[in-house]
Length: 371
Ligand code: SF4
Image 1 (cartoon, rainbow, N blue to C red):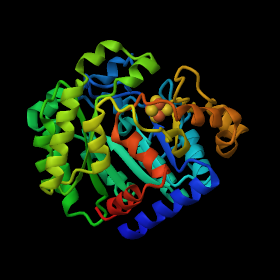
Image 2 (cartoon, protein in one colour; image 1 turned 180 degrees about the horizontal axis):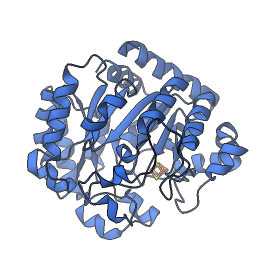
Image 3 (tube, protein in one colour; image 1 turned 45 degrees about the vertical axis):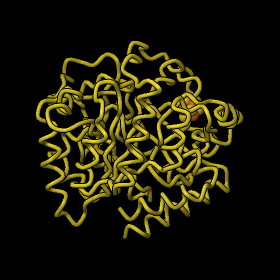
């Protein structure tokens, strides 16, 4: 589909979902397993098996599902191939427009190509978020199934490898981007940089790389608010940026944007971050816009992560997605979220502003489509 048509479809789908009071993005943490060891990560499953040693491909070999065949057994705590397919088809039927697949590291699922093709054939726009370590090897099967590819890049060269715990990772990314450059089925390419005490000044280094790779650049200050609300290891908070460092990052991003580097955060977000680095001055609409499904298929309650809104069995075999987001508990979560400012990343703030129909956000979505 031509990029401008895709942007129009996204905006039209968003406006329809909003008018009907339903989310338009399905965010699916496909797996909790990961082959990287980022010190800032809050999402990786805490007890990895010995097959998930950092930077190895053992976890892929052990994942137990194959791209072309149905799987009877999925790794513990994950949905089986057919269950994920059922979820994606149901999401498309329920009117969701975009699927965002992440984790953990989604390329560890051997059935990833089959799953993404199912989503695409059901009519969803597909975004894949990955550290990219296995992507070169897996790309022949995934080619054409991904509309937007988001690569995590926290720094350049060995500094990035050290941050992610995977030797040679950055070199692999360079090779992959080189291969994609000449591919007519190249997805839209975005980079995501997590800013923390482990990579001071990284934006200044990654922005020229994004420009060279023809990619848009997102950055997320390392989350801290969710640690308190989600029972995460609070020792991680030591790596989070202090308010003055967040102000400095906002200043740096504004400057790079003015110089023509492809920073995707809006000026409104960056100015807010400068003014209020702890980001207490926005109204969160994320549960209205995004339905989040955990690796085990349960539906996330943003404000009480230890108490899912529903199990996969409930949504797959009875309740259904449409009834779920119309349920009193889902609606209560969406209302409660409006008083929550635990998140500090531009995705949450800007998605909330999109829900509020800020013209700058509608322009941004259309602009993203042209990347
Ligand atoms: S700010 Fe919004 S997305 Fe973040 S935890 Fe609170 S309700 Fe959830």
